[in-house]
Image (cartoon, rainbow, N blue to C red; front, side, top):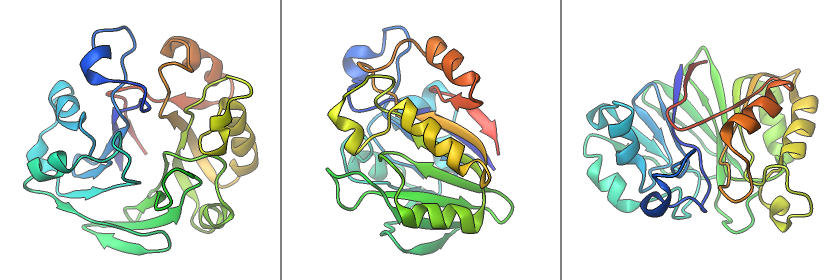
Length: 224
């Protein structure tokens, strides 16, 4: 399984005003094996063009939640070869060659927000953007399935006392979850980094490297 991060930013990144600044991040979305799109936001086509991806190869679309930095109906309509699948928390669907399990996310401003466990029969991906502490049902699913690669929300960075910890993670929360879940997860990665709450990518990556946590950036591609 291959994952390509098309965007790794939070809602405070704006493609119209921030694209030319150093360290630009599009709104968060990811592409699995070039055919399964997670979160069809308004930055997707710019990312596909920038990173040399063929939009005609996208066959399936899934969505974590309907906030505008994760969902755009025009993007869905432009992906004419793709089918959109709505998956509610607690549901598991076969989508092409993938088994997709949706789990309720701890994201209070959107009650229908979900995270995903995506399996191709050999590898299991946990995709957990947006959200704060993982809920107990998510932990049970992670323990029962085993995860090869987990993508965790890290919106808040290292800012203390930020009220958004009740629906987003800071880096200390990520590290606490990693310590607990390491027996069940092979590799950890963070994404959804807020522009106003993080230093430059290089600094974040250097900080997290000592904890063996990858820091995604736009265009980052890895085999799971």
